[in-house]
Amino acid sequence: MTRGIVKLCGMRAPEDARAAAAAGADLIGLVFAPSKRQVTLSVARAIVQSLDDLPVRPPVVGLFVNAPATEVLRLAEAVPLDLIQLCGDEPAAYLDALDRPVLRSLRLGPGSSRAQVCALAEAYFERPRPPRALVVDAHVPGHYGGTGTLADWELAAELATEFPVILAGGLHPGNVARAIEVARPVGVDVSSGIESDGRKDPVKMRVFVESARAAFASLNREGPSWPLERQRTIAWKEEP
Image (cartoon, rainbow, N blue to C red; front, side):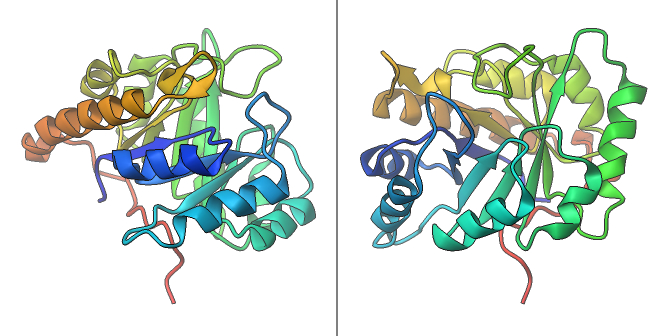
């Protein structure tokens, strides 16, 4: 099991992505859904090209909300993207149409039970090509992520005993270590928490990654207590 994944999301310019890579991001996210962080195809291409000369290039994730699969595939090929993140209301069968690794976002609403959330997650993991991980975020009516609202860490922790969970929602350098301690995810995901005045902040990126790495290292030293019973290996590229 890969542990300690750090995803820095919502890059809007090549300099953002290069700063994220320099900070040590494992995954870099680009938003294609309507949002203040949405990028065009030309900007996305420029961002990806700016990473090509790096000794180690972080995989790039494209975030989509309720887009037709044909459009997702077109953009994934044109950019190109390494992974696809589904952040909307896409049904489990939607995964069957995609041609590269998928992260599936789950927004945990107030009153959600472990049974309800696990049943929803299981529907995705029963597909022929299941997601590589679940990105657990907060439920904010009318929004599909990027709100800075805290997710339910305790419920995320329960989900993480059965599925690979990447925790998102309201994380920042000051709380990511505690979030990892409580939720015990395989990774963390941040966007607004690494911004200053609405722009990506290289210092906040670096401190966030350092704090997350230290927290994951502490969990890794615990060994058997990490919940791995049903989790699957996370790989960011398809096997040949």
